[in-house]
Amino acid sequence: MYFGHFAVATALKASKPNVPALPLFIGAGVIDIVNGLMIIGGADTVRGNLETLPYLYFDLVFIDWDHSLLMAAVWSGLFAWLCYHFYKSKNIAFWAFACSMLHWLADVPVHNQDLMCTSDCNSSTWNFHFQAALHVLSKAVIWL
Image (tube, rainbow, N blue to C red; front, side):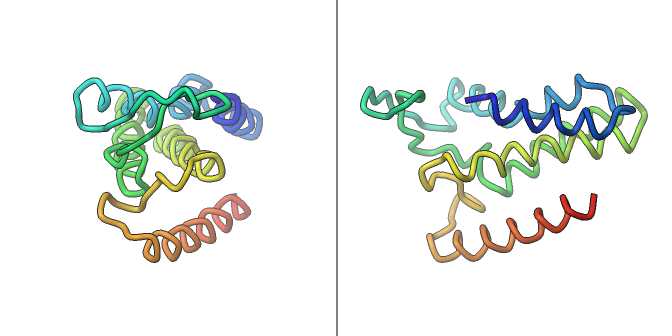
């Protein structure tokens, strides 16, 4: 499951050799680290389901506090802020943010419609925002 997230961090590291690997690889997992904490704290809801294949074995009932587009940006921004204060570099903070947000983008094809824009998105809003976000992110990646 993490292969795709670490692949993003590896590709960014290869293209940005002056950025340390640690913020990229941690950035690739920040959203899932927060997800685990939110599940333990009771803010997110998952249910065990042995029928969910091939690897999860649980249903992601409510994960909007970390995997919605808005909250992914918030947690990624907080992580970037921490990186900025630790490394004293806007460049490192930017790429840490980008890697963390690319986590969300890498989740889109494999999640079962549980990635929302915000916690109160309906499906038509989701489709519009998803298409807009994908367009903007693809343009940003091409530009970089």
